[in-house]
Image (spheres, rainbow over the protein chains, first blue to last red):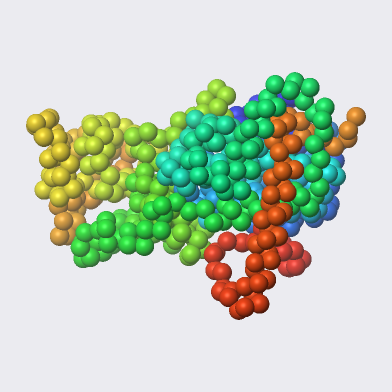
Length: 461
Length: 71
C-alpha cells in the first residue's frame, strides 16, 4: 500500500489515499494517485479553503506535484493530544466539529469517509480537524458510512461519561477504534431506552449491528438514505451533544477557594516563578500537575507553547474554559496521571505515541512541577531518585516545589500511613536534594513566604 | 466499477449501522419537526429567551470567505 518511504508516520497506514511522513522534522502528507481526483475537487471547489479560513481544518500548502504524486505540508502542530487525554468538553467540541464538517461536506457534494476521534486534535486553543484526506465524493442517497464510527468514537463515550462520570473517557485508551456499540448499550442504564435519541442511535444500532453481524454477503442490500434524512441525523446528534453535561463539571467556579493557601504566599509563589522562568527565555513549557493552569498563566504571555496537565478532569475542564474565554492560542490543557502516563497504543505500540515519547519530541525548555512531589512521593510511593529520573527524560530546566513535613498537606498524607509512617522518614529536604542531584544541579532555592514549601530551580546535568 | 467509493472501502461501516440510519433519521425528523413547532409556539407567546451557550451552529457560514485568507 505505502511505497517504501524512509520515515512514514506510524499512525498512517490504514487509509490508501495517502500517508504522512517525517521529512527531517517536517511532517508532510503524500497523496496517492487514487485520491488525486478527490483532492483536486476539494481544492478547486474552495472546500478546503473555506474550512481552513474558518479555522476548522489544519491549513496546508501544496509543496510538490508530479504526475504520480502530490505532497502537501500541513501547518506545524507543536504537540498532539489524543482523545483519551481530553476533558469532557474537549471531546464534546471535537464531536461537534466533526458533525459541522460532515454537514458542510454534504452540502458541497462530499462526505467525511471516516469519523475517527483521532482526526481531531487541539491546536491554538481550539479543536481542529487534521486529516485532510478524510473526504470523499457523496453518492446520492447513500447513508453515512462513518456513522457507526462517530457513535463509537464520540457520542457513545460522551453519553457514558454523562451517566458514569468522566473516568469513562479513559476507556478510549483501551478501545483504539472506539467503544463498541454493544458495550455502550449494555453499560447504559435502562432508562436511556426511553430517550428516542439514545434509543435509536445506541440501543437500536447495537441491536441492528448484532442482527446483521453474520451477513457475510455485505452490501447486497444497499441501504438508502436521502440527503435530507442524513442532515436530520447530523442536526439531531449535534443538538443532543451540545446539551450533554457531566456532574461536577459546573462546580469549578469555586475552584480557587477550595485549593488555595493564603493570598500573600500565593502571590509570592507566582512572582518567584515568573522571576526565575523569564530570564531562561523559554519557547516551550509544560506544567505537570498544573491544576487549572493558574501558575503556567503567570508566564503565558512570554512563552510560545504551554502545556498544562492534571490528573483531575475538572481542573483540566476549568483550564480549557479559560483558554476559550480568553482566546488563548498557546495554552494546551490535557489530562495526565503522572504515575501512569499514556502508553503507546495500536499497531506495534506506535500508532499513538506514548506521552513520554511525545514529551521528548516536544522537549520543553522549562518544566513546572508545583505542589506535585508530595503526592508522587507519598501517595505514589515513588522514591526521589525515580521521580527525578522521570523529569530528567524530557526536561531541561525544572521548577519544582518541595512541601516540607510541616506542610498541612504533607502532614495529612503522612498521618494516613499510620504504623508505616517511619518508612517515610526519608521525606525531607536533604534527601530530596540528594535524589534530584543525581540528574539536576540546583540553580536557585527559596522558601515561599508564609508557607512550609521550598521552591527550586534545577538544571539538567 | 463504481468510480466513487474506491477510497471509502477501507473500513467496514457495518451493515446494521447503514440500515438503521433510516430509522434514526425518521426519529430525528419527528423530533426536529416537533421542536421547531414548539419553538414557533413559544416564539408566538414571547417565551423565547436568548440562548447563550458558547457553541457554534452546525452550519458553517460562508459569507466572509473572500476576506479571510487561507494562509
